[in-house]
Image (cartoon, rainbow, N blue to C red; front, side):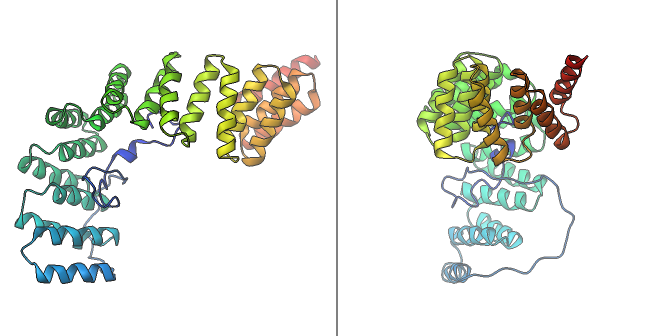
Amino acid sequence: MFTTTLKYSWIILLGLCCLFAACGDGAGEGEGTGETPTDSTATEIVSSPALDEASARIAENPDDAQVYIDRALIHGKLENYDAAITDLDKAITLNDTIAKSYLLLGDMYFAKRDVTRAIKALEAGAGVLPRSKEIALVLSRYYFYNSEHEKSIKSADAALRIDPGYAQAYFHKAYIFLEIKDTAKAISNLQTAVEQDPEFVEAYTELGLLLSKRKDPLAADYLRNAVKLDPRDNDARYALALALQDQKKYKEALEEYRAIIKESPQYENAHYGMGWVYFQMDSISQADAAFKLAASIKPDFTDAYYMRGLVAESVGDVKNAEYYYDQTLRIDAQHMNAIAGFNRLKQQRK
């Protein structure tokens, strides 16, 4: 995600775009490290019945580009990347107008951590197929991964010239603009993404998170849309609960936390959030119980221990306050709030 609170990360927008998604439309997602390896000896090819069947089809149709693409996909799943690249080169030689060949070729190089060749493969595809929005977008993602932000924007814009309603391209541009610290343009592109695709859950979630940081009351509305579209997305629901509590809509926030816990009882942040809301509502015993549950689920949850200390301090229970502040600092000796808590207690003794 743009922020670090939810599951979405920069990497899910990159690479392996169709390798493990059966190349549906050639524009899926995946991950890699971006390092270009040095030359090494070829690894032994892993075989399988599916690979043998694909080879038999090639023997029967040696001039059909598609059968080489099909075998390359199997090679990729088996991590036979060099063999996959050989098949894709052959497919392109036979028919250079199939977008999937270039997309898969980029995938294979990306899987080998060779971003430079992945980019070159997609650039070649864009040259041959300038009307392929999928190639333009994936190329934009690779440029972004390679920190070539200007090229990434231009390639995403190329995809949008082909299809002005391409929501994924607006979503990706939002990532680029956030990376270069232009939050306003990031928000604008996310808003356009959901306008073009009203069921774009990730875009609603990211938009809600960005607006939450700005304390914008519209944040909750976007996050409600995300939750409505995917009620089981606890991360989006958690973001909604945070937005609601920021707006001091504590009862509504508690409802969202309860919904999360019903779906995922071990979601420690939801228990912590409930504790925080109860504390704001002066429901001290309920707050402490929620923080206790959060710490039991995640024994190194420093903030949960700290809040138990703060709860104890708020009712004058100095002994337990000191104990939980101490527990916090045993896990994180630099926890500033716990240090401040100890200092407050010391001042009270004077």
